[in-house]
Length: 315
Ligand code: PYR
Image (tube, rainbow, N blue to C red; front, side):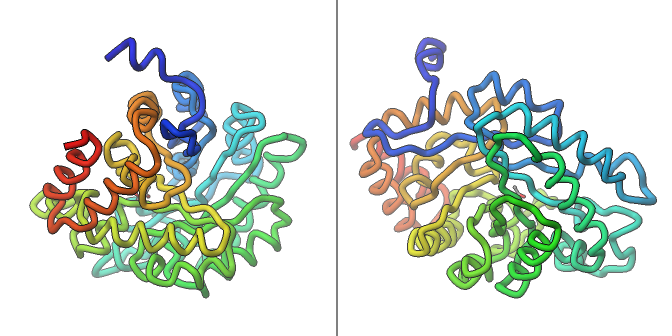
């Protein structure tokens, strides 16, 4: 297995050369060396929350943000870096931003909703990103968490333009409404990125922090695969990209299925990249598509896993 992994380097692709960029999820500059070491082709999810955790009373200064963003952007010259703007609220409350009295925080003011209620925080973050990218050859993409519909997507794209950000603007697909209406959202933004953990939580009405409902958090659930397929098909129809940056991308077998569903890039913890690269390189795109169809035809996560495995092992 070690030898197979050592042989695995270079860009992510199926055995017949269909390219699927393999990107890293990073939480800050400290995660960059591992991503580079694993041969990540860029960053598919830069979580910016870490910067906001030091001070419970206010957002970090623009200067402090520029410095942190630049460290990550510099590490991937010519590569892609997808930055997610602040995703506060629900399981990541911030005292100065998150309402204290929400009866159901996962369904309350979180993600982009928080930023639209505090436009000055979003503006500072976008301005800091614009300054951090100045003069660097990096290919910057900026996305918003918890986009529900086209109105949200437009509000985010407008804020990006107003901040003078020269980047692609995107929407995360974490709410079923966004997957169902992906084509409408793509009228406002240039790419989609599926956050499969939250998408599972909202699809199955199963809190991701409640162990008793963890069966419904399994990313192999066929209903979740259907929403991935809808999003990827919408992106393809619009000539745009649709990546996955949730937990699902780090499961090598599921990565093949996601590729077969039409997902255009996969972002994961750096440690998973060599395994996903090696597995993807074993199968053709057509095999991935057959595995994806078999998984979607199943009636449970376990059956989907077995069905995809059977297709890929030629049973
Ligand atoms: C999610 O999977 O929900 C992310 O935010 C990545």
